[in-house]
Structure formats: C-alpha cells, structure tokens
Length: 514
Image (cartoon, rainbow, N blue to C red):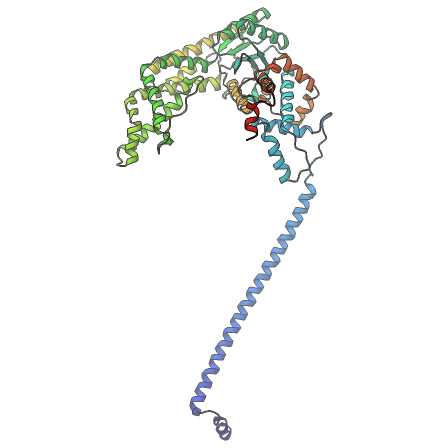
C-alpha cells in the first residue's frame, strides 16, 4: 500500500498530505453538486407532473367547449332566406330595417351603414339606394294615413307647420280618450297621425274646411287641443255643423310662453340682462373663457329659452364666487368679462322662482293632463315652490287660471273621470324630428318628403310593411303628392329654374373647369 502511494505521489510536486486534503475537499464538492442536481431533478419532475395535470385539464375543457360549440351550431338557425315582396327586389325585413334607420340617421347614410354591416358579417344581401329608401318611407307614411279607423272618441291635437314659401301644413294627431296615459307624458307611439294637410292658406275658412272633411272621414272628435292661434280656434268652430259638441282646450305650454312674453318682454331689467348676454358672447368666444358662453337664443318661442339662460347665469355666479378668492390672471379676466352678472343678483333670484313654478306647471300638464279636480292638485304642487316675489306669485295665479279654464270645459262632456291631454309637446317634438330628417334634403321648404311625416309615429316592422305596401303603390304615392300640391313645391320650382340655364353659360361652366 505504501509502495502504491509512493508511486502515485511521484507524479505530483505537492506533498502527499496536501494532495489528500485537496482530494477530500474535491470529493465533498462533487457530492454537494450531485445532491443539488438530484434536488433539481426532483423539482423538475414535480413541475412536469403538474404541467401534465394542467394539460389534461385543458384538453378536457377544450373537448367540452367543442361539444358546446357543436351543440350551439346545431341549435342556431341559419340566416333566413327572406323572400322578396311582390314586384320588389327586396324583402319586407330589409324594407322595415331601412325605414327605421332612415328616421334615425337620414336617407344618405343608410346604404353606407348597411354595406358596412353586410360586409362585416358576410351577408349575401343587396344594398338599396337612398332614393329607394326615401320612396319606401313615403309609401309607408301615406299608408299610415290611409289606415286611420273611424271612431267617436278621438281627441285631436292640431297645429300648423310653416317653412319657406306660401305653403302651410296642418297636422292632426289623434288619441282615443280611453287611451290617454296617466302619470307620464305622451309619447309618439301613443299618437295616431290622422291627417297631414298641405295648403296655400291657413285662415279660419280653410282650417274649418279641412277639419270638416276630416270629421266626415273618421268621425267628430270629443275634444280638440291646439295653441292660441285664432285661425285654429275659429276654424274648429265650423265643426259644430258636423255635430261637434266637445271642448277645445288650450295648450298649456303656449299659454306659459305667452305669459312669459307678457311679464318679461316689457321688463326693463330683463332687456338689460339680454343686452349684456349679446355683448358677452362677442367678448369671450375667442378667449380662454369660451366654455362660459351663454346659450344660443331660440329664434322661435324664445321666451321658453329662459330656463337655460337662468341655469347659465347661476353657474357663472358660482364661478365668480370662486374667482373672488383667487389671485390669478384668469380669475381677473373672468370678473372683468362676466362681473356684470352681480348687478342682477336680486333679479336672478326672482327669475329662478319663476323658472321653478313654470317647470312644475309644465311637468304636471305633460304627465297628468286635465281632469276634474286637476286644478286643485296643481295648486297643491305649486304651493310647495318658493314664491316670495310678486312676479312668481303673479305667474302662479295666472297659470292656475289657465288650467282652471281647461278644466271648466269638461262639464260639457258629461263623462265623469275623463282625462284629456293639455300639452302639444309630442306634436312639437315631431315637428323637430321632421326638420332634423329634412335638414339635408328639403333646404327649408316642404317637398315630397312630407309624405314621411306620419312614419315618425310608427314602429315599423316587416309585418306592417307586408300589410301596407300592397295598399299604396307608387302611383298612389304620386297621386297623394299631386293632390297635396307637393309636385309644384318651392324646391321643385327652384330645380326647374336651375335646369333652364343654358349648358354653355359662363356662370355654369366657370367653376366646373377650374
């Protein structure tokens, strides 16, 4: 053994004791490394086992979802192959969809929207043109007017619409007295368009003639609701020859508007306030204070814009209060430009009281209508408002008087518990909706688009289209437009005037060649 160790040591320069110590330490290091490797291998085995379990769980989930997808695919019905309407290249479903979309986004946008949808979902459907969509809406509107049922309990809501030119349109909406809602305002779907009557005159004789003809067709109403226009009131009196023994109610909102015009139109303080509003717009519209611009005034029925003006003034008052304690250039400019409002602090308090009582009055009229005992309930509601100023107290007295005059007429009907609408808000809303639809098509005049007006009150679907279109053909539509005088409208005469200009005219070709 000693000989072997001696021979082994001849190959090293270090002493044998040093070699033994070195080999001993090396053995320990390799043993520790092997132990760590075994521990790492064990951890990797555990991790692999866990991953295998997760993989099995995922495979089970995939198999389950594939089974669900297969079941869903088997239960979902494929896109129906809608059949076209007779003499049409489109189905009733597509026509109804186009009629609904056009009332929301206009005729020009509908084909583009449908094209995007059809491409996104790979639907093999044709896209109709805007002219076809407009024609569909016109036919649908005329068909609605021709489907009015005759009844003896109609409540009429009448008003004139006026645009450019000499043409006027008398619109008559109807609702059965037994269907007047309680506790909510009238909606368009509650109303039935009874007549859309264009005419070149709106005097009492013409109104009386139109209403008389309508009464012969659908029956005499139990009540008529209109604004304070004398031609409507006097024209409705001619219905007495057709057995009209009902009541003619006044629209509360128009009464309030006239009352505001009476009390504020001649008020010097309100005139000074309005003058400062106009100056303020010019002062701040191109500055950092543009977010404080006063609301735009309404050209028509401008006294019903008072609530927005008062809200604006209240907001600016608060901003001035905050700016008073701030030392900055913006706060200083705010006080300089809008500080004039502090001169109207007392007036604004009075106008806020008036705004509150008017809001209560209009909300009550829209939601409750008029019935026996309605005025007393209104008086209770108005008593909850702060009415310290004489102007607010005067408004309360006058509005209660207006409501009482409507309620007193119900005695004539001899129908206990009857409830009637006393606000034409839904009709005014329809006029606004029609002008929005007309904005990019009629250029401010009545055109053939008027045939679509009745469709604003309709929730169109494929079933209604199948029922209506066989009743109103394109010839029927042209006949309705001709009888209404819309084939010689302002827009059509303007188009003819431009068409008469020679093609080689310098005024026509100058810009086209640029």
